[in-house]
Length: 76
Image (cartoon, rainbow, N blue to C red; front, top):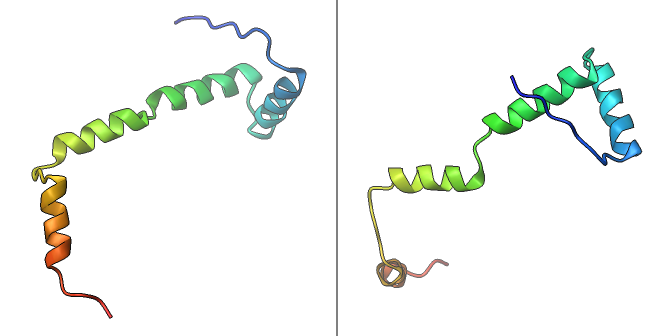
């Protein structure tokens, strides 16, 4: 396992993290590790978009979409 050192964390942020860790009955180290592991496991927006694009089976041009919208009857 790797070791991570965090420098220049504000006193306010450190105090808040310590309080949150205590509320969760965790050490600061365990709490921070959990946060980092959850962040690493969460896909980025770019990854989600790429997965959606990979699943799309229909490809329409902007012109085709506009023509479809124009062909619909008016809503009242």
